[in-house]
Length: 434
Image 1: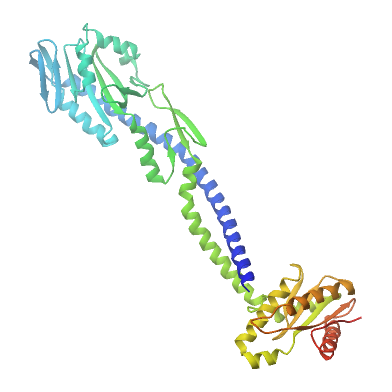
Image 2 (image 1 turned 60 degrees about the horizontal axis):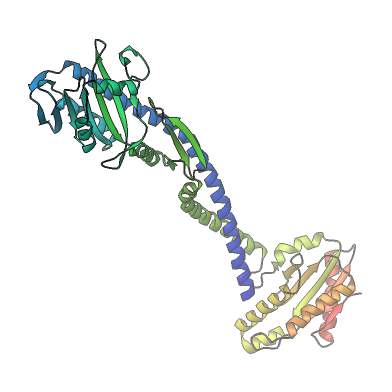
């Protein structure tokens, strides 16, 4: 009985693992393609976000051109938390309110990813910083001529951008590390012209983590697992950020896919497994005897009636009524179960075992010779006799038949007659009808 239970447990685990493997595979493939399709949507989203950043950046030129100026002597000033460095006594544009407003508008799009907003005047008489970082302070001190801003604009290919009706009249740099803070940033350079003269250069430093933040927000919104780096990615897609020459890679890792689908797969697999288990249990109860695991007579008898060739054994437990009367029905049930287990251990999987009555069984084989059927019967008889069951000596009597072109009813009568001979001749015997 324990052996049969172990087999059932092993079989159940095997079935569950097969279901789980199939479900994980199906869920992973489906979720992977969902992420692949979503990659295009993310690409469009990132591009649109950067375009919105650029649109806000360009609006600053209108503020710059229409703001007033005030005279400031050489020195350092603070207006609206914006640092102003004046290199020569001069008229200085009142830009601090506009710079603060620009930062506020940008932060609506990129949260806290705005690192620095700076405006460099041309010629370099003064500069505005929000905030003034060490790198910019050192840059300002290192200026050795007034036209340095024009040199920067020329290097970034932003000269004469006033001629651009469409396209990029600003530039997004590749990712670099700000030495004093070790912060990874990308900078937007936007040159402001008036009457073909470069008046100033607006520089907006954005944390390089902005891209990964965009990807994270997209993942949270659409339940995807796209990453902004290609290390270990099973699928990759490259793109260029607008107005930039830097190639960005978006990727999907198989391990991230599996992590997401694992719990739903387990949950779905358990649900499916228990549904199958319940269905099989109901089916089992209709087909099999609960006590022995043999086929039920009312399920299998119709199939037997259709057969015309028969090799079968009819088995009966000797003196079973005496066992019940002496030791009780619980002990009698234990005997039936153990006899059934020993019979199953001595027949093949393809052989059919049927509980025909209380302590009576039929074993149906493929067509055999009389000698082989008798040997199989002897093996079963010996397996029952050799060891007591629950401390009780138990034996069985067997009657067998091999018949062609006869009905099951006739074959059964002949097997029953052979069984009767085994019982009349002292029980614990095998008789095969000739």
